[in-house]
Length: 236
Image 1 (cartoon, rainbow, N blue to C red):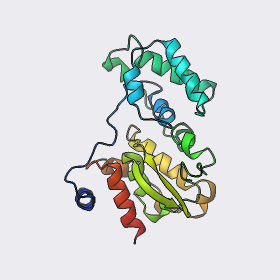
Image 2 (cartoon, rainbow, N blue to C red; image 1 turned 135 degrees about the vertical axis):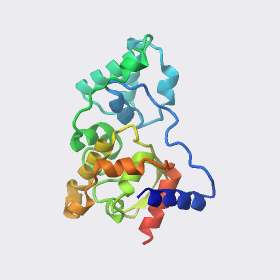
Image 3 (cartoon, one colour; image 1 turned 90 degrees about the horizontal axis):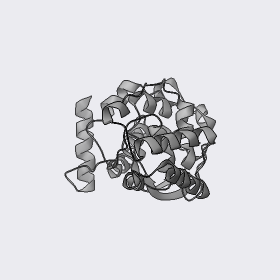
């Protein structure tokens, strides 16, 4: 299994004309309750550098920044706002807890529907139809069934470059979601593939297991490599 993935990394690197694969996300937030929600909501419009550079401001300032996010169209309910503010003011506030304490997060059962709402709906919308010209749809997206592992690679390492989905062109950057656990990525892929109109094409053989996600994390790929892998699979 590992040999297959090592070979894949070599192939896509040669296709892109470089010897090394770039890091998927250079900015990593401190571990703590609400961290995943911050990843899902804040990267709708920008990367995490803004948050990292703003670390140390007080709760009132973070609260004002959440107002700005809503003004720019980011959607979150009252409970999500409370969780966002609690994380930002604690772990990126003036007196963050020690890393050892911050990392003590009790894992919860991976729920694909909840994960989709937190991590994906801001861009792809709760109905999975995306935003024309900006974010491609997941409902009825043939990429989901062109290759069994492609959606996993996209979530782990991101995707960049021009793509066409159902005749509509998109040219943007999909960030990596490697901060999610193996079980969470598996649950998310399975949820997307088995909902909306996608359920018509979904078969048990497409079900992704957490162990498969774990196998795909190494060797690490970059978003451009995932684009090359996508082209190879769609060209079959």
